[in-house]
Image (tube, rainbow, N blue to C red):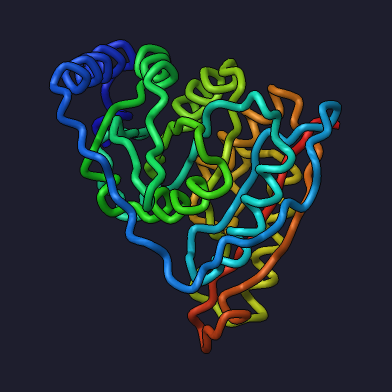
Length: 280
């Protein structure tokens, strides 16, 4: 892909130019998310903030069939993050494999009902200068790993800015490490990976593969070529590197489920985990 073939300095210059031209144009549209049906947004906070053991991020599904899991994740996370948190970095996979760069973002704001979520242009500028991130607005018109999270962010993390990053499946490890290291230096930020696990299997296989993937996440050996069934392996490697660097090493698995819990049948299963990482 173009973002990986180009030499890093050339890619960085291109990304900076795109960013500056985008800022100058002042034509960024607001991406409006339609109201979700059958979600009451009434989950209570599950735990109170502990300044000695704050949450720094986590993993959440993007399959809206699992909306109860997603909502519970955000209710729990919102209660555990530092009140000074001002920005959400939201990672997700490039399902359509159409991004023009290994890592892409958008300068658009997001609208859900009466809540407007603005981009954190300061962090975006830093990523374009140091981590070869480019804007690619068209990707975000279709990428549900990002759009599916917006209603829950609007409800439970209102008032915070957002840095959405879509990761192409061919992104190289060095590119991911460079971006993760840049993000790990951001303060007052929470990091969320929107990721589903096993896909297109029967219920027994879905559960087995999910448990294998959970073990792989715990091992943190992301250079190994172990086959795991999840849809954003690069994002998982990035998230673990960021959280490890910031000291968020205590993992709590909030819940596991599959699409069979919500009516799926046959070999159409998808696996879900909600996981939060906190300081020890």
